Length: 268
Image 1: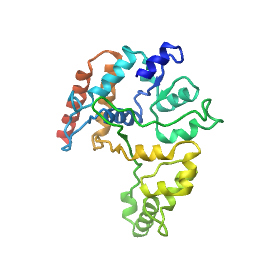
Image 2: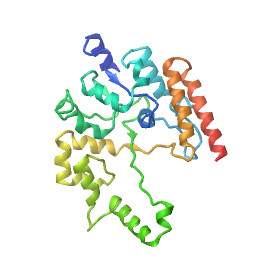
Image 3: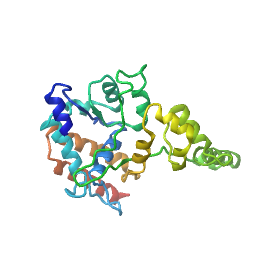
Image 4: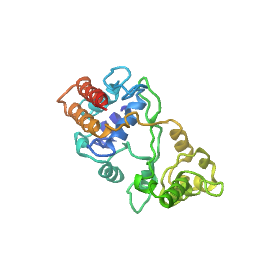
């Protein structure tokens, strides 16, 4: 925030920080990263809502965004209509100094054929909140066996082999995870792969593998993945947008999201 204010004062950028706050699939990841770095949570260990707690919830993170838009004007009010992909393109065009984006986007941002700022993009640790840390959110895409495959012995065996190939070892090595990274840049959750010379070299072509490893070690899993996540996510997204628009206080907005969470939980 302090660096952005200096940039804004010097006319370097009208809105130094790019946040994509549109209601789309990436929104919960961006919210979670900001909440975790502030030392907050959406739910407690028992799965009850704490997002509305001013000390331990999501209030500080949401208030930071509200202040960034209205008080400091370092984030555009258009962030509510900015999705992850459009935000990425805006950042790649050189319109912003800082951006909250998925890690794997570093490859595109430092590719001169796709980015106007190639070679100048660096990953930093997630900024530490007042009472927080450099924590961020991490997730892996889930691949499971369908009930239809499980009902057929042959298909079940083949599906199990595929799942093992995806996440486990082949001939004693995490072969497929390495293939996915080297070919597509897809992240991996196996710590030992960071010591692989080919992976280190591939990462260092467009990023700093040590920073990436350091940040990944601080990643926390989302604390809202439940059968009722989809219904709650709609309410929560609207609540955050309402506060950013100035139609509700951060506390009132997150109280609404918390009440919806507990109501859905009680019906589960």
